[in-house]
Length: 213
Image 1 (cartoon, rainbow, N blue to C red):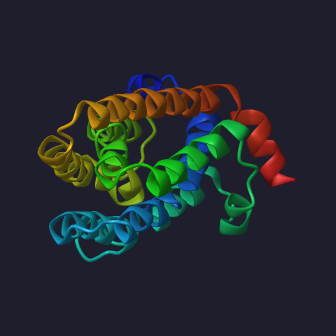
Image 2: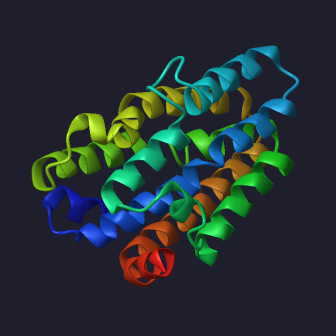
């Protein structure tokens, strides 16, 4: 899906569906991060988590608004749907399962693993992904930079988030048990991301029609 946007071969319907699903993914990120923060005993790690939370949920460090609001703005512009339609959009089971997994890790796994799950397994690939999407939108779909901040904001921001998480994992994930848990989480989360992209390709027309009814 990312490559087809970069190449200009993705349909506008597919991109619109991606925009809606990406909003429904992004809107839970601050709660996931704050869940990890609330369980953390280390002031040093809490500070690192707080910097990421500020980026995700405010305009103070990274972007002109919280990242969920930027995702909503892009979805509105690209699909022509209203905020209410996007908010009420049916969320496929694969995406619901992905959200449930994120919260399960945030609530139950050791803090180092939970932070690594978000930053290493997810945000480490986001900068290149978002760069390809942004370039494709600009080149092939005539989307101005000011109308796609939802993607641009993750190019630099997620590089920092990923580095923060990786630094924490390398410092504190020192036992074989923790390392095995980290590898399991990375594998599990990547499977959820695979399901996310499959849904973007296979489900857009039916879902958009449903939302418009």
